[in-house]
Image (cartoon, rainbow, N blue to C red; front, side, top):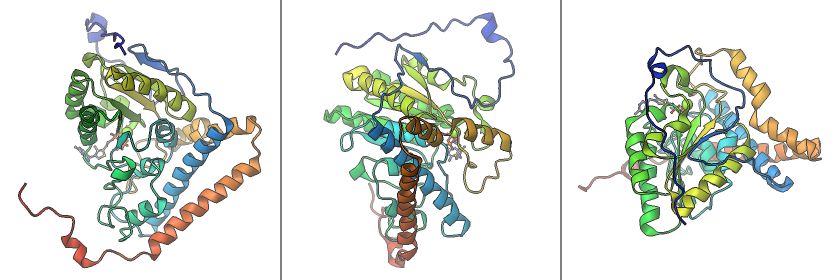
Amino acid sequence: MAKAPRKSPAAKKTAAMRKAPTKKKPAASKAEPAKTTGGLKTPIYKASKAEKMEFYEQMLLIRRFEEKAGQLYGLGLIGGFCHLYIGQEAVVTGLQSAISPGKDSVITGYRDHGHMLACGIDPNVVMAELTGRSTGISKGKGGSMHMFSVEHGFYGGHGIVGAQVSLGTGLAFAHKYKEDGGVCLAYFGDGASNQGQVYESFNMAELWQLPVIFVIENNQYAMGTSVNRSSAENQLYRRGESFRIPGMQVDGMDVLAVRGAVEEALKDVRSGGGPVIMELKTYRYRGHSMSDPAKYRSRDEVKDVREKSDPIERLKATLIKDGVKEEDLKALDKKVRKIVADSADFAEESPEPELSELYTDILVEQY
Ligand SMILES: Cc1ncc(C[n+]2csc(CCOP(=O)(O)OP(=O)(O)O)c2C)c(N)n1
Ligand SMILES: [Mg+2]
């Protein structure tokens, strides 16, 4: 298919652009109208009732799993770093629901539990990994940030901020080289979007027309720094303009908006159009990691987002409007809670790795 011409906005600096930046508004929590560069659409996905129920269950599974992980951390059963995804569930649920398992690839940072569950990885092996048990997906030696399942097209789990963007570009290169029709979803945060290697990757991806969607999960904060305080261009969907990469800004608290937008992005990428940037405006309810008291924002700010934009409550309201009964949703919650409780039991009942495991899975030869 012929490549659609992409708008390359003129970089003409006006006096107005040069003047001192005006005070920006605090983190936006309200849904904003979708914005795009390069002519991409962001329609709302028209899901059937059954699909909406699936999205609801998937988001609920991530939320309950993360709540349980938070509890186990409090009990001392999870050690080290642990970054929870609570609040961001609609992003990964909407995106993963649109890709083809076994064909496409996924890579993300350290806030990765939700991505693994959305890739269809067994909650038992994820929880066992978090608690450092031998039955964990990395045999209990990786922990929260270092989990992989090539079988599920999930390439980690990376602790170095921004590194997954370059690795994801490499995965996209492999898809193109092998002509396997796959697309890579490379997820990263608003903080990571200020890293240098991200732009080297953008350049190569566009130059070589690689099949990659750069997914920016803009949850408004990078540790304790808000995106507005750290980013000269805080409209992150525009970050590819100088590379001619089109971008779209999507309400990341609305799973149907996410699914609608990614379908358009996938259409463009799969038809050989090269990379696309998707900025998902979302929010994390918990601290950066379990050791963050989150003093850089007010409780009211978090409460406001929870009350007005929670992705699960929003979909629930739509389902109720569609005629789904409250008790059916409660039954689903019960089912999900059992899956999560069973994963915690599985983890607690599993042994820790043998000491001899210290000497396996390590590189000793020259390469
Ligand atoms: C190269 C590098 N620099 C700094 C850090 C420390 N660090 C860990 S997470 C983080 C913030 C990243 O924020 P963002 O990309 O917005 O992702 P989020 O945590 O919001 O999901 C930083 C600076 C790191 N791990 N790697
Ligand atoms: Mg962030």
